[in-house]
Image (cartoon, rainbow, N blue to C red; front, side, top):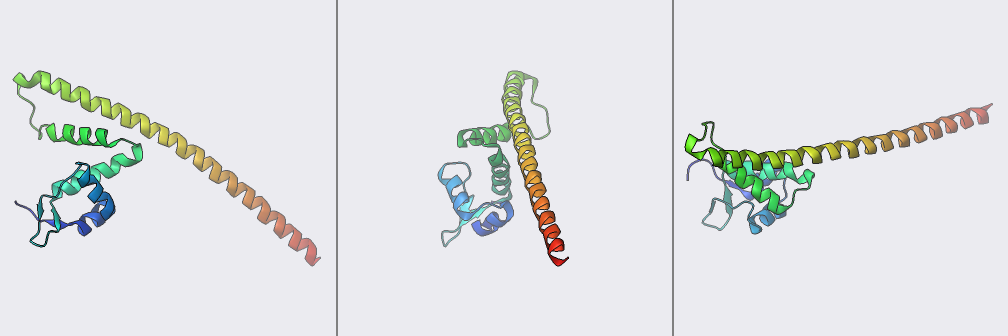
Length: 147
């Protein structure tokens, strides 16, 4: 094994995922530690950290674990900068189609989140307006009481 190994606490800090969540992802097969220390501690590489960070970015979009696994598997199949050989043209087309499917779904979910955020911001603005009117009315009442 090459590269620096990290214990689960450091992985948690780097990804923003709780220890419990990381262990859960291990239990359901989303990620696995590369090694275990002599004391039995989970040890992770940068590759596992990147994998968990990607899973964390997918969470707000509501993808199920099956989709998370599928996307991770799909991304692992992507060529590392080099085009696929011509003999793999069908495999390339299938890879593009599968990736496009998840992109379309992620894009649609992002749009839905933008709409929800706009509604939430509108609600927050309305509360601010109500609060401002109450504070203004209270200030006017205090001014009248002083007169």
